[in-house]
Image (cartoon, rainbow, N blue to C red):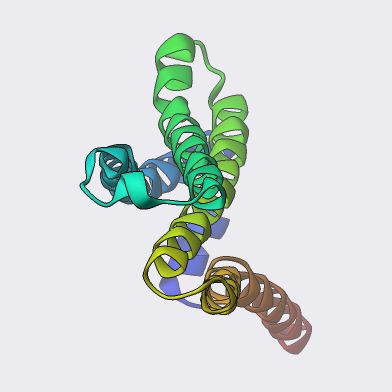
Length: 169
């Protein structure tokens, strides 16, 4: 067992919740910056010179991207407001569970916003069929890196930990 696993297995519940919350905050700091920059980019699109030439479908896709980016931003920032509301009330487990759900939901809406934006731009520059293909590829890439690999690693690590425990007996 590594030193990190040993340290974690010896921590009490309060320290575990504090560590989990600190980890979540660090992850959210990275995501917040990216999603806010992306949202700002999406907000400026209608003011660009080419936007009036967009089709009705492209405008609809733009609205999906805009609203998804807005919801993503709200969800990823919401743990900060929740923390302020619960500060020093001893409700860290509730806060960590809430922050986890909001971060996960925020990433899901960010995926929708990114894929919609890719569709919009490719459809505007090239064609509808190419936009569908490249958007589907982008969605697949996001799903593999954001869900598939973590899910696979989580299950693989669980099996590895079980095997180490069995070997230790």
